[in-house]
Image (cartoon, rainbow over all chains, first blue to last red; front, side):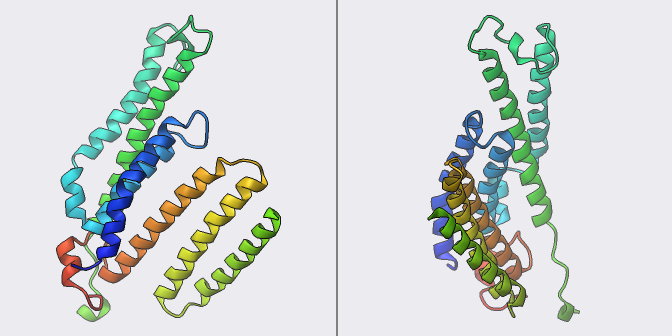
Length: 146
Length: 98
């Protein structure tokens, strides 16, 4: 079996990358990061796996049919939070009405975390979809293959 | 001291750029771009301490990761001609590219 060192490295890195993505996702309030960066990092873990072990194995774990569902669900979570705050009587994405009695702006924190989850899901699905679209393209024949 | 380190890293990055432009084969260029990325990580870490913002270390960590993935992707593309090659394909084609 070829590329043994590369595949062992990828196996070792796969879980820490996803852990780092979750760190960026949930630590986005206090440090650099947020939903977009976390989504890209999460997608990068699966792209790295697809590069090392082949696209077919990656698509067994995350079938291409799931990705449009993930994109739409992410946007639905984002817009749904906005509609929810409107239903509570505030403006679109007016997080303060979620917990109006809190003196520590708990509504702001809850709203930001839910919205960033939606962003992360949508971005991860979109990045993986872009990679699938690029990788599934058949190579053009070389000049000397005619 | 951090300023001197940053200047030294920038000089090393410029040298790497010359190799990336002049490199006769694609592997020279991949190696130089990979080394350039490593120096970018170092520069980010040094700048983080220089500006008193240790949160730069998170960005440096992520940059190292993306740099690694990009190098693997470029090498795989030039070796097999496509990014989707399965494990069987990769084991089949060991020698030159198709």
